[in-house]
Image (cartoon, rainbow, N blue to C red; front, side, top):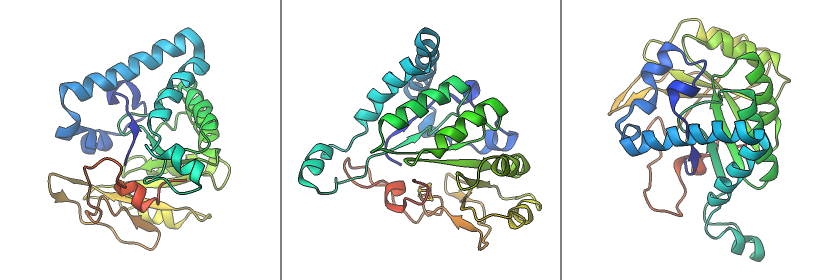
Length: 247
Ligand code: SF4
């Protein structure tokens, strides 16, 4: 998906379901190297340290430096010449991990406000009241899109959170396992609002859950294997090509 910031799951996925813990792509081999784990732990320790020393403002200053690094290499040239950079300026908050406390969310809100030219997006299960209130402020920013991550176990909680928040802010993301709960689709059908729902049929190591097809669901083309990942720098990543989840 291009640039992303990650945290360790055990410490930060405060509202994870048993199902998402089991199916999380963070279990995949690519996320399990000692270096990857150490990086996520370092991010977590640093964020906690900075929050304790200077609150969301100090953490936001540091996150801002990361956002600067996510700028496409030709960003300034493109700006000066009035052209488009080779790849868009995007940042996914949390490839792995989730928002674990209100102060931490506030830091991201300050950061996203400062970088209005960068598109941020995130998926979350942190439907805990005080965290969710801050997340709704973050998701309300014009350059930020938040997705409520639902599965067979927590879909009612996700829908409740969607309905509690002002309309038009949140969208829904479905982690579709091979044995999707029979209540999920009727619950989506019962929504009295138009809301985008992206569906990620579970896949790992070449094994795929049979995708559930429905007019309400947009199947993620990357999860369906329809967008090839290119390893070269400065080329569009699948999410930048598709852009369905971006603000
Ligand atoms: S739907 Fe598109 S933007 Fe969203 S995760 Fe899949 S490829 Fe990325």
